[in-house]
Length: 357
Ligand SMILES: [Zn+2]
Ligand SMILES: [Zn+2]
Image (cartoon, rainbow, N blue to C red; front, side, top):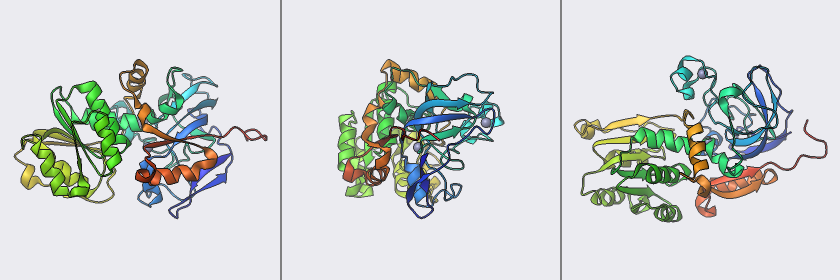
């Protein structure tokens, strides 16, 4: 089968790999239909994720069809269309029982990291009973790819961690897929009084505006200007909730400057370096700072919300590619402003005449 492999040299290559096989009774093999590229894959290419070693098949998001099942997987059937969760959950370890599969003792984020992932014709899913979801036929499978990671990350790490109350003021820092999805979830589900977006790319800030952000602020005009303009619309009170969806020194500085007394910073960026925490300014402001790696425990709820039309992640799919065009897909995702890219969905090519091997 064809697979996207991390070379260890800031690039990917497409290789022929043997089709994965069931290694444990709790495994499933899934034939991938659609997959996508994540910001985390770019972190891997930059060498920021030491647990992902050269030779690894990348990808932790996707939709597919169950190809084979280990004997212990009784809640799925061969041929069923499934959503692959980016988080592998054994369902029974200490952390899974605490509803924190991100820390699962034999799972967590391992797909396309510690084990081969979804940017391939087939993928082995360990602990399949808890790591796959039946995909309702009413949800467009291409759009469903966003439910592997982007939507549950926005919801769990941004929205739920931010504890948005109706009438709250909400600032979202970052206008990538996670930032924009967080904006939509906040507006559609929690009735904030005001939402603002802080970002870089003009087109993405315009997108945030079109999605209902009351104000947008560009850090390209200078970090201090963005902060003072954003604080001005809160009458200098600061925001009740700040969703930090970038993961840089700059975004964390802005988040601390924007949070108001009693407010919460929900930080969900992937941080590659240490950042200053300004306790000298924050200690007496009753703030809360939360971090989280997606647990993907909300995925069944989110599937129902998409089915019911309560939320709509459709806008996230900005580009579609075939697997043959995977290098173009990476290029578009790596230069999102140039290509206007949010999520790029990659659809597997029709099987070769040899059939799956
Ligand atoms: Zn991802
Ligand atoms: Zn576990």
